[in-house]
Length: 153
Image 1: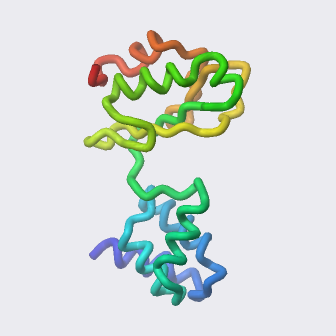
Image 2: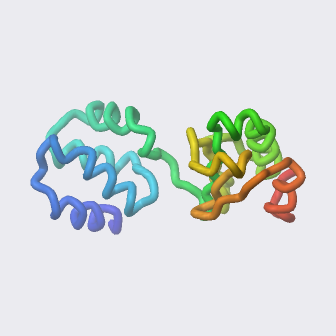
């Protein structure tokens, strides 16, 4: 199984101590793009802690994901400037256009959608990032143009 071989490769850089939990989670997520259930169980066994302890840490930190992200990962800013200038309408337009809700991915994994506290582009609000590209001064009309014929609306 390729997943087992990959995990063995990742684990080979570690000693198997409890203190290595967060770096292990980060490395596994870096490889898979999220934290698969089987990998979480393997980590628990490797560092000899209950699986619940691994889940407790992974769910505490916002950096960890439990579902795969899309090839085009959309992060809608929900910071104060973006919120005041219409971020909730932008999020609603994206959800309607793609047929998914925040925290979900399209079935073909082309798009995934999340909100983030701030992307640091307040002067361009409301804005979002698609992968590493910032889209600025958004309106629902601009959302329709950005996603072209890919929408579900």
